Amino acid sequence: MLELTNPVQTILVTSRHRVVSKFSGLEDDKDDIITLDWHTTVSFKPMKYAIVVGKNHFSYHLIKESGVFIVNFISYKLKEAAMFCGKHSGEHIDKFKESGLTKEQGEWVDCPRIKEASAFLECELMQEIDVGENAIFIGNVVGRVTKTDEKRLFHHVGDKYTTTME
Image (cartoon, rainbow, N blue to C red; front, top):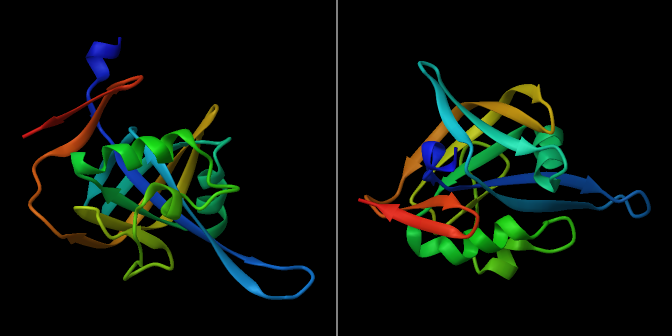
């Protein structure tokens, strides 16, 4: 089955949740990055994009609580950062800092995006579909940016194997 469904383009999805301390009342943002291979456009007019996230992932809770996410399309040059973000939970670490990726504020939603990404889709959560251990989040694309014409995007073949296509 692996050879039928792979390679797939790998994306990094960023999310944010504003946390208010019970004791001090101070607000703090908790930002995260999740590496995903299961994603697709589901409508062009209006543009909607779907991502599949495991319910046990920290990002699942951030997206569900905040109602927004950003799809970051990345070049093969970001392979190591993507692999790092896919193997570590952001619940107790800052994945931006640990992976060396640069955080910048989204233009249309209150969510960080990755400065080094080749393109972005900024999404407002429209629907969640329960599919067992995973959820499909469908987002209304409220803004999109293409920063480069980079053709060597990052693709995952399976397990630890990666590739790029031109």
